Length: 121
Image (spheres, helix red, strand yellow):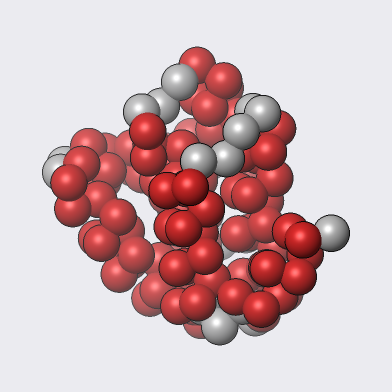
């Protein structure tokens, strides 16, 4: 995974986890992801990007993610979004806001149908 792709992936995860306030379990999952990808700098960048303005974080992130992730092959787009969905499932709950945000991104990336079919199973 290239640096720009790592930044986008860490931004995606961090953005969704910040939706209701980042808790300790979510921070641990972010740290685990950063460790497995050697992406601590990218995680720091993502958290700083979000903290610049929490109110506009989703719109700014969506714009950035659309530039990077929407250009990736379909399988990667599905894999990345599904990974975030599954991490939310691991923490024991998925808020309506988080699900809606991920479905909006899936729609942007033309993978909405695939994501819905996978999570229904």
